[in-house]
Structure formats: structure tokens, C-alpha cells
Image (cartoon, rainbow, N blue to C red; front, side):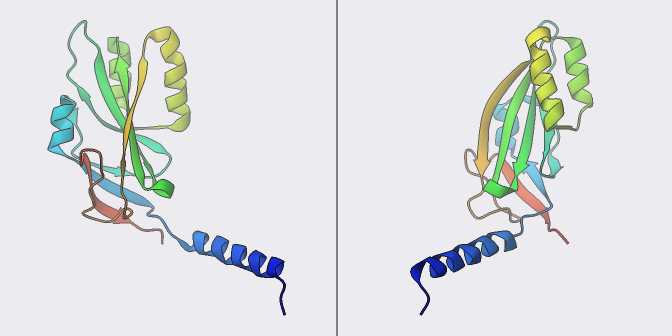
Length: 158
């Protein structure tokens, strides 16, 4: 007869194995809702964005007006927790605006550098919110928190 400790250790192994067998999508394509575009007053935006984990994608920006800040919205796809998180970089100079306007996506390192440089340049980082996809990333799924993002395509790992 097996003792309790061996049974528990065997159960831990099985659970660990189950977690590794869950595959998350390699990439997803999202569509921004009209509601998101209107609420955030996006002047220039990408209607559909293909996202891979580990990058922050430029969703669009508010209208640039002389002497006024402009906001750039970025989002990242987090497959391990079924979320899309988004934030704003608020630009205060033409140079900052043009630099972010050129970027379709940025890495975690670039994001950190922009945040650090913002202390000197006035570029402001504003954390926003997230959309949770309770049933995972499936075509047609709409995230909670306003339904800002809809999954239009999913590319599985091969």
C-alpha cells in the first residue's frame, strides 16, 4: 500500500503536467471597438492589430494640437492570464509625438526606457486598464471592461 506522501507527490506531478499541456495562441488579432475609439477620442488608430506576447502595440493616438499634449495608446497581450492590458504615453513635444507615431510596437525594454526618459523629457506614462477574456482567446470573444477589444483571428502554435 502506498503511503499518503507518495500519493500527494504523484498528484502534484500530474497537475504540473496538465498545466504544461495547455497551449496558448502564438498570436491574436484584435479589433478595436468604435466605443473605445470614441471614448478615447482617437484621431488615428489601427482598426485591427495582430499581437504576439511580449510586445506593446500602438493602438492609435489622439489628435495632435500645437501646445497641447497628445496621447498614444499601447496594449499588450498576456496569454497566461487571458488579458489585454493597455496604457497611455502622453507626449508634450513634437519630437516625442513623431517618435511614438513611427512605432507600430515596442518591446518591454523600450517601454522602460521611455518611462525613464520621461522624467527628463516630460513624456508621461499613464497606466490604464485591462480586458479579461474569461473563456480564453477565441475568435469572436469580446473582453470585459467596456468590450473594447474583439478577437478576430487566432494563430495557434504549430
